[in-house]
Every structure is written in C-alpha cells, then in structure tokens.
Amino acid sequence: MRGIEHVPWLYDALMSVVERARFRRWRAWLADGAAGRVLEIGCGTGRNLPFYASPPVAIDPDFALVRAARRRAPQARYVVGAAEALPFAPSTFDTVVSSLVLCSVGDPKQSVQEIACVLRKNGSLRAIEHVRATSGVVALLQDAGQPFWTWFTGGCHPNRNTERTIAENGFEIIERRADGVMRRLHARRSAGVSPAAIQRPAPDRLSAE
Image (cartoon, rainbow, N blue to C red):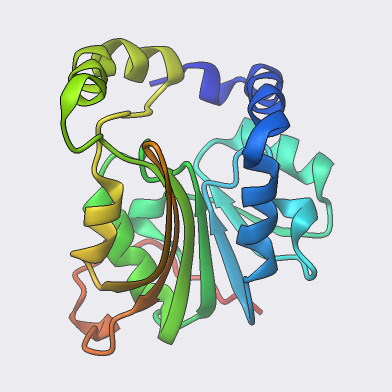
C-alpha cells in the first residue's frame, strides 16, 4: 500500500510542519540516548539520522525512502528490509530506535519480537509512537477514521495500542512520557526473553560490522 509516507518530498514537507512544535526535540531525545551499536528501524527519509553522534545502521522496506535517507545522511549504513523480518543475527545491537514506525508495520507484534531478538541482553528500545486513546471522542474518531487514514498515508493505523504491544512482547518500559496520544518510550529487553525462543522468519542474516 502506497500513500504520503512513501513519497519522500511529500513526507518531508509534512514532517517539517510537525517538527516546528515538539517533535524535533523528541527526535533529539531518541538519538541522544542511543548507545553502543544502534539500529534504526523504518528510517524513512532519514530525518532522525543527523541527530546521532555516531552513524547507526538504518533499515526501511522502501527503496525510494532509503535513497532519500542516504542523501541526508551518507555516513549511515543502509539496509532495505522489513521490521517483521530483521535480517540480523540475534543479540546484534545495544539499542534499537523506532520513530512512528510500529503504527505502520504489517504485524506490530512480530516486529516488536524481532526487535527483542536482535537486541543484546539489557538492550534498549527507544521509541516515539502514537496510540489509541483510552476512551472518549478521540478514540471513537481514531477508530472511525482509521480505514481512510491508513489508505491516505500508506499504512499508518492511528488506533493501535503500540505501547501495550511493546510491554507485552519482551520489554519492560522504564521511561514514559505521554502527550495526548503521543508516547515517548524507553524500554529495556526483559531479562527473561531468550532470542533463541523467538520464532522468526528466515531471511539472510547480516552482521552489523
């Protein structure tokens, strides 16, 4: 499904408006706390990438977006691939970053489990996501508008409870900031999660070296 998220110039124009408010500060927060070997999933046009002190590995399923990201941050290492089938060996990364990604993936549960698998013990997930409102008019509007919004954007589901998906699939949320339906989350891979126990698709696995 293709929508505004898959047209680089249009997506960048939209995000430029959003970033005039708090979102640019939240991007900086994502990158500032990313330590060790870092993977950014769903890098899109690379709007987070200039904030990193050291170039991360960046992955996105859309080749046109990866090309746009490479122009913005040529020093990063790029991979074309999906969050539901990350092409990396277990326990490869210290930090995974997700920015408005889990609302759009085909299978959010599988994506979060993949993230847990490629993280090392005590590895961190740093995320900015939106969630379904708990009740009231906003939740009803999110539910009613979801089919059109998903079509218009090319995949975004405004009514997913992404925070709960993270908490129920291998992570302990240790820092949380809520601003309406937006969430800024820092989660740690749960100690009891064994990457070997996670059922994964079998793409070619890559080293992050």
